[in-house]
Structure formats: C-alpha cells, structure tokens
Amino acid sequence: EPEVTQTPSHQVTQMGQEVILRCVPISNHLYFYWYRQILGQKVEFLVSFYNNEISEKSEIFDDQFSVERPDGSNFTLKIRSTKLEDSAMYFCASSLDYTDTQYFGPGTRLTVL
Amino acid sequence: GDSVTQMEGPVTLSEEAFLTINCTYTATGYPSLFWYVQYPGEGLQLLLKATKADDKGSNKGFEATYRKETTSFHLEKGSVQVSDSAVYFCALSDQATGNQFYFGTGTSLTVIP
Image 1: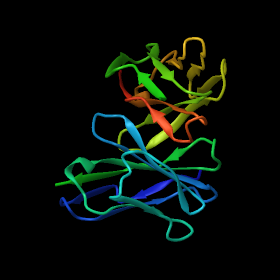
Image 2: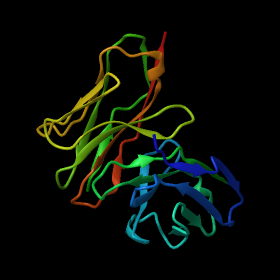
Image 3: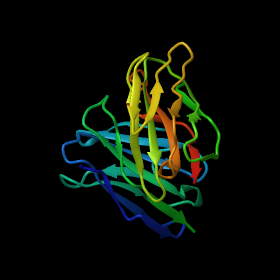
C-alpha cells in the first residue's frame, strides 16, 4: 500500500540553524500538508500546498517557514532560523483531492537545543 | 472557529474490555470526521471516517457514528486487544474553513493482558 515517507526520523539542531525536513507524498496525490505536534499538545496545521504554491497557511507559518516541491517527488519544509519553541514532531500529509482523506507520514522529531 | 474536544487520557483497560473514547466537535460548515491512530514509533494512520450525519465509520472492530444532534463522534470497540494500545486522535475537516484538519489532543490507550 502506498505511504507517505519522511526523513530524517529525528533531527537535532542548534538554535538559529536552518533545518530542512523532507517528505515523499503518495505518488498520485496532488495536495500536500505540514502539521506539527509540540509534546503534549494538539496536532496543529501549518500549511497546505497545491499546484506548486501555498493554498492555505496558519498563523504559525510565519516568515521563518517555507515549503517547496523541488522535484516531482519530494516536498520539503524549511525552517530558516530555528528557535527552541520549534521543537516538535512534524508530520507531512498528502491527499488526492481537496476534500479527500489526508494520509500522514511517520513524522520527524525536531529537537532544537 | 472549528475545534475538536477529545476525552482526556490516559486510558488503561484489560483485554476484552469495552472501549469508548469521547469526541465532540465545533464546526462552521458540515465537516467530515475522522479517527486516526498512532502506534508507538509510527505515524498517524487513518482508522475510520464518516462524511455526513448518521454515517457510521468502522474498521478493525472499531466504530464511530457521526451524530450531528450531539456534535459527537465517539469511538467504540466491543473487545479491545493488547495490540490496540496506541494514541487515538479525533479530527475533522470542514470545507467551509479550508481543507486543513483540526485534531483533538489524542487519547492514549493501554490494554493490559
């Protein structure tokens, strides 16, 4: 069964450093998403991406964040200058259509020191 | 705005016990409702869904009925197994507010032999 994959599974970085989290969505899906879950809190929406542009974003998704689909398979989330409060589990998801079920990857745990 | 309120955990049950995890929601439009499960070390997996009032989603012995009158989508299973130990997330998507998912806080379930 097709699945969303994410790399790395765990990333440790120093405050102020840039990180790139990588995702490979399900191959025929058209909509891509990033969510995050700070330890002990809800899973929160960050951004959705369709047709090579951001379609929706939350208040969390400020200028420090960017997303890109650099080729036909990868979908990346970049955090330009990490802060301690960026430490969280980041989930990538994809869906075939706008209203379709979203399928999630296993997550990348980001730890900012 | 849209939100999901989920029963607090953790929940500990003996094998073969009956499980209920409560979930209520607030939505602007007519949402689709989901239960996701996260097994230890893995990502969010779709467990079941319902897209309109009175629909019942079911999978692996789990069931949930979309109750518009009580704005609820409670998860039930008649006889839990040790392998059901995981974190369960209730979620909604609402076209009226875009296609992002809104998640509950998650309920940790431990089933003991």
